[in-house]
Image (cartoon, rainbow, N blue to C red; front, side):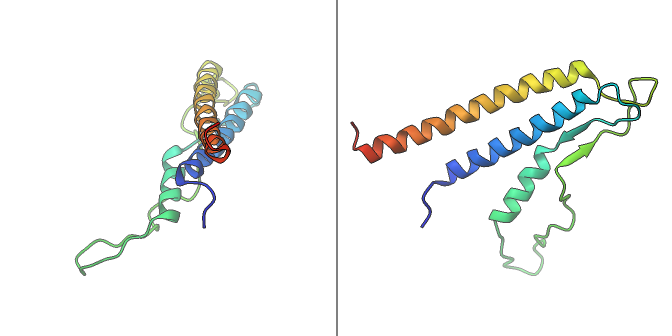
Length: 131
């Protein structure tokens, strides 16, 4: 028996994603002057596909149907942006872009925490009997 719904599990995963992204962006900003440092980012698409893969399964009902395998998917969620260089020392961190991403991630985190708080408040109301 599951104690919490899938919604709370999904919100927990969203908080994990936001926390990881916060760490990566902060690391990029901290290394803005490090020679040859390459900025990183978190790939939501890879994280989502990994989650879907771990929770969903598919059955082939006909031999001509496509196989459902993970062989063509990336396992990692961190991407290194190695194809650019903004500074003469090989560093490619754009501090303005990173600050914008940091603000965007903060808004996302706040929205998810408000939603999960609402879910727990609803559970608390149900447990107390509506009082």
